[in-house]
Length: 211
View 1 (cartoon, rainbow, N blue to C red):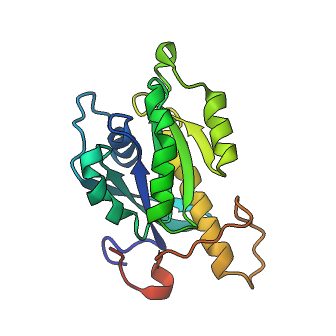
View 2 (view 1 turned 180 degrees about the horizontal axis):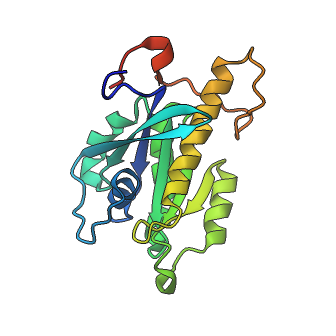
């Protein structure tokens, strides 16, 4: 295979949430294993990629970091299109960012495909002494809104790998279960009624690169 084409599926995943919750550092921790304490606010949209292995398939994740500031929301809304996954991020030490999750979830559901896989992420779990949102609150909100949930720390890398691995595995299993309905595959999607219909680049089927 040529350089850059050695993957079986490419999934677009967006990071959304208020400015300052740590979206950019979650992206850099997962894709480059880096953390920048002086991280500047993202202007518009940035993205990075990383490939992982799921069930013997190479999954290339194209992860988009959307700016959280209000003035950039009109720009970022266009980037929800084609996304098959979203990490909805709040800061466990800032309750207002958790309150705003409701607004972000509405925006996501207004602009993204209705079958997008969504994970709620309580970031900055290392700030235990400043915690303003309990783990139970996050779990309850996730259950009520049919989201998966995890708490992470981009600073000390806690659960960052796990968060991305989980959402990418969920997306892959939903897609593969849908496309291989006739195959004797025991793997079932984690969300029983969910199917994914956005544009997914299946290299094996299409032979081309996405985006």
